[in-house]
Length: 154
Image 1 (tube, rainbow, N blue to C red):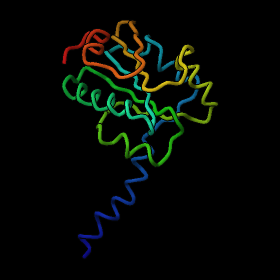
Image 2 (tube, rainbow, N blue to C red; image 1 turned 120 degrees about the vertical axis):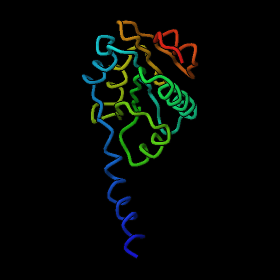
Image 3 (cartoon, one colour; image 1 turned 45 degrees about the vertical axis):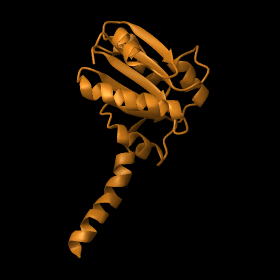
């Protein structure tokens, strides 16, 4: 009986801890995160939301690419405040990089700090080559676009 209950207790305790893996994103952190100087290796910063189907396609591709080439760093930003629903949506992609969700700053201010030209459409992906180069992709990304922007091969 105890052997059956212990895993359940562990899941109940660990579930909320896993959800705490999101770092709140504010304006200053967003500016730094999206600065090419902050990335000394090939990095992708992927904006997504819980109700964006195209975002899920991008996350699936990024997961595959990150597992194929360990040199690729993937950072995710949920373009919405942290909620209990976010972690279960991101977890299947097994992306090991930092995870952010909008913090307490005004959402429009965070969006402006991310990209002053951004109108809020998702997915939005920022590709850094680790040598000062940065490209922005609105919509679904492709392996070719990632290879060209990062200099990595998959």
